[in-house]
Length: 468
Ligand SMILES: *Cc1c(COP(=O)(O)O)cnc(C)c1O
Image (tube, rainbow, N blue to C red; front, side):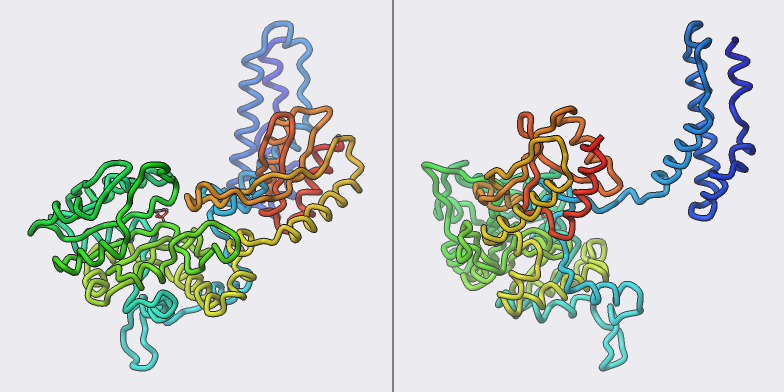
């Protein structure tokens, strides 16, 4: 045999396209995807043959059945969405890489209605004239936060950029050195400030900043005092931060606005539910902050958004700033945000219906019930692997409450005939990827973040991967 002879055995593109099983694919997938895939698979085989040495040439066998299966499989994956749902078994509730907060099932209709119909996005139905997209959430945000005014942009990084750009461009903003934070994804306060055109005036030291440090730094170029919630780390020990209320008093004395980037932005006092105390937006407003910014998809549990609440005179300046147009929020986000905020009008229903809040405050008993049910179903699969329930901790994530350890239960699986890494990899590469944690020779599935409705998907994966 020569390579030349092997090349002759490769089916032609047209032959393959007319083959019965490939032909059936035309009913489900676009022609260009099928043709491209057939060409690519043929090319793969050509390359395979080119790479053969003399001995391998003699025993090479082109299996047409396998080729066709490979084409069908690749067509399917080429046409599947790149952005797909996953099952979060990591126990990190606000997992930034997995999309942070999940929207509530309750608001499905509101979001979908806005998506598939024309809407009052920028139309005032009472007057029949042009309206503003910000009006839809301004009322409810102001009510929930106790603020005079509110607006929403693309995310909290954009909110900080807009606030500083609108009120402090070419002027100075005073920040404590202990609060020059970096948030995941390279959001750094000093860099965002630079982009906004505001000049950073650092005061104090990493561990201690005093009110006098702020006061001494104030001069005619000072446009704002900025407080940043160090959401993703804690400085412990010999430390001092200036209270917001003291900064507000100082700001009033010199007529300088106080801005707080509160990061996660919660409207609920989590300490009532046994979690760490995070500052709430209402408290910041009540203490007199002129402007407060926070994320929509961290502890709030809504869509990605940057929310700005505070005094009307400042919010009005921001609404008119040209950056607002570039950072503006889209209608699907607005619909999801308004509908999520409405759930907050009754705290109990917010806790029950907003997935992020529900997962964070989930009673241990509920986790236990889930874990038992899940283990019971896994046992029915009759896998020849060691599976049991273990105690562990879930994390809040999203850079919020970094020290909080939420007690949870994990399904711990110790595979017998495959490596944990291999199984983790196979789970991750399914059409609905399942993202689990590895700990030594175990795979861990946190029952807090896997929804009950997702058990069947995980069970099917276990059956496929672990039974063989
Ligand atoms: C998360 C965070 C941001 C960035 O918010 P995004 O909504 O991700 O843009 C900014 N500041 C603080 C303090 C944060 O915790």
